[in-house]
Length: 225
Image (cartoon, rainbow, N blue to C red; front, side):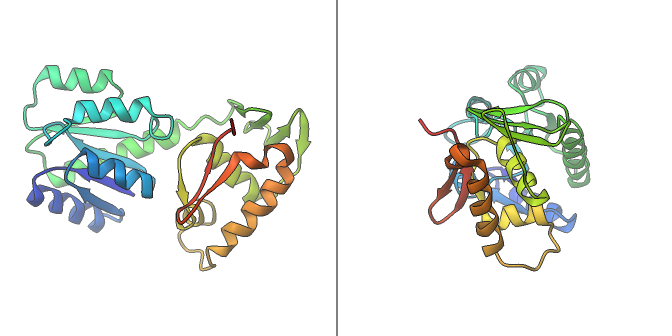
């Protein structure tokens, strides 16, 4: 999912149309409030964020995204009609992944989106252990431990756990988990996710409660207080 935050409805609709025609799932949003409401419902893979917005501007929105553990790693491409060096530097310093100067071509936008997604996915750390409380996942050795005791997981359970541990605090819908772990061509039901979450929780023992059910939405991982 790609969120396009742009207050001009004509530009916003064209961005969404072009991304959809290029094989992406995209949704247009008019401002920061709508963006954070959408993120609470459905996580995304990238945000196209205009700087000049009603209410909070794009710079402030970017600051909020980077300050929140559930959104800090979402790639963001900034866009602004100003095109000034100051805006670009501020945005990049705050953690923007790329910058588009208006007016920009739709194909240029798609190219930048693909480039950022390739870079982010290629930078995924394969050898840095992930830790949360007593739970550790060593991706380099494909080993999961709870309080230093090794836990045997199936491939799908492992992939679910890794996805959660790479996105602590982020809410995933069942459909999103199906797509990420089983693939977009999987024709099973979302009940498959619930079954695997149940067995994963059981195997994680004292850490099973780290995977929390978000009623009416899906699941997220957080260490209980």
